[in-house]
Structures are given as structure tokens and as C-alpha cells.
Image 1 (cartoon, rainbow, N blue to C red):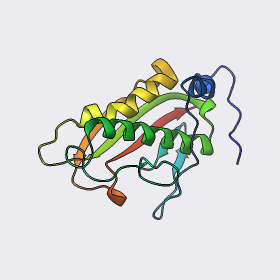
Image 2: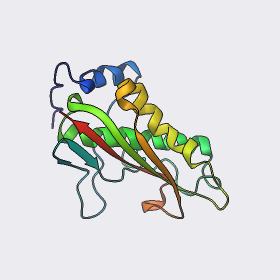
Image 3: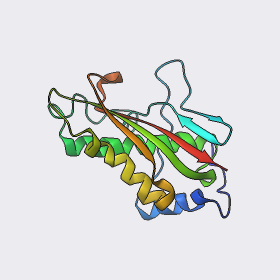
Length: 163
């Protein structure tokens, strides 16, 4: 399925060019591992399901951040989650329709005593800032959890406003 054409003059219209400038390409949308869809639109908002850091259909790391996975690796995995979220949004409505990244919720599978969840989720937040500039600044929660699906170290969900 080809990506929708960006809407001229909209905030996300330059997202494809910015991704290319950063040396990034959108991955194939990750197939759901349950009874849900990767993203859904309601009104002017697109909500993504939780996106795992899948790369070529696999998790590069599994386990808990602060034990099996370093904080730096977790940060990189959060960036992959954000790319997967963008792929889900793109497949549904096209990045060119994004006018604002509104909210990001990040979950970090955390070893006992690990409190660096905000720094880990910065991997996703910074990607949105790099791609969308001011339109990528968002409200956010970074939550430590005991386990995530498939043993993933991080998971991210996004709410984006679209034109």
C-alpha cells in the first residue's frame, strides 16, 4: 500500500523529507499480536495502539531496562517504537495530515530500582521533535512496568491531531 500524498501547507507535510534528511525510513506496519488495529482515527485524532520496538519483524532486545537492557539501548528502542507509530499513522491517514503530536505514553519494562523511565522515553519524544519541530512537542507519561508483550523493553502509544 503506498503512502498517502502529504497535504500541502500542513504541519506534517515535510515529515517525509525530514525523515529522509535524518536517514530514516518508515518501517512496514507491525502486524497486531492480538485483536486490535495498529491505529484508529476518531474525529481529528489518530490513536495508535501500543507500538513495540520491532525491527524487521523482530525485537532487537528483550528484558528489563536496568538489568538485561541498558538505559541507552532502551532509549534507542523507544525511538524504534516512535518510528513504528509513525508508520501506523502514515498507513492510516498519511504523515502529511499530522498537525500536532498531542500525547505520548511510554512504558518501560523496568528492573527493580530503575527510575530512568523519562530518559528512556526521550528516545521517542526526541524523534517527534526532530521530525515535526514545534508540532512534535507533546504531553507525555513515562511509566515503569514489570512486563511488556513479547518481553519488549519499551512500548509507546501516540495521539496525533490531523487535518
